[in-house]
Amino acid sequence: MDDLERPSPKGMALRRPSLQPRTQARVRTSTSPALPRRHVDVDRAWADTGLLCALARRPVLLDKILDLYGASLVVAEGVAAEIRRLSGISEAQRTPQTRLLCSGADTVVRYLDDGQIVECPLPAGSDTFDTFDKLDRVRRQLRGIDAAAAERAGRTVDAVTSAHKHAGEMHSIVCAARTVDLGRQTVLLTNDGGAITVAESHGVPCKDLGQLLAELGCEADPVDAAELFNSFNEVTRTFATVPAHRQPADASAFRCLKHGDICRLCD
Image 1: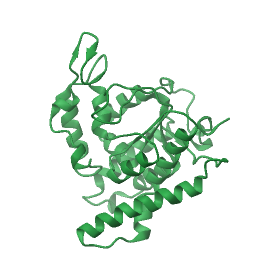
Image 2: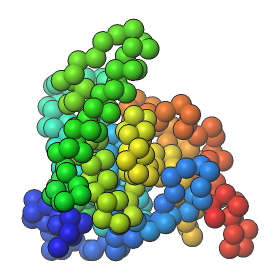
Image 3: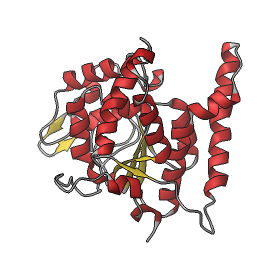
Image 4: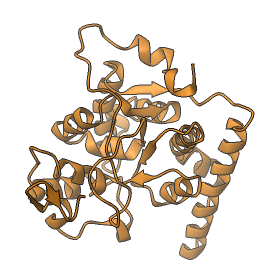
């Protein structure tokens, strides 16, 4: 049994027998505005903390994404730990800056507890894949991006804070890299520009929330483009912001121009 067939025992224990199974782990996706926007099948779609918590602010959209992605949408252990930590912050300790993030985490925890989003462990090492070496390399890359950004802004970065900040992203990138190493199809779902840069350097394709929501505009029963654009702006206003060069300019970023069976944007 390979790494992709070993869900976390914790995640398995949380599944309730009464839950209706979602679709099989087949996803269609694209990774760049220059590529088709329609989905392509993948085996694992690794969701990041910020993206999930942002999406959870509109549970109806989170449900649509889960219906579309099915069992392939998963989280790494580090992401699940981050989400549970955020949800565990008491109301009295939540600040105006963190309240919406923590509220989103509250919602995602319910999906984790119900087994609708499965938590996957870090991959076991192999002759060609050293998990701890990969974690260290990803950690150093993410810290390097933090340090460069801090230097440009004329400030310093605390190494401990930086490592804690990127724990979930490190786990997600390493899990996705292992999926690639196994010859399987994968995608990292994140809004973080640094994580996207590092993931792509390890051969991992990425999608941000704008690209993810755009998939819902390309379905047989599409969500209205203006609604998707407004939802994107709403859920990324205070956290999980997308890098400026990836920001959708208007509702056209979510509109399918299908004519018959062909769409020049999506196909």
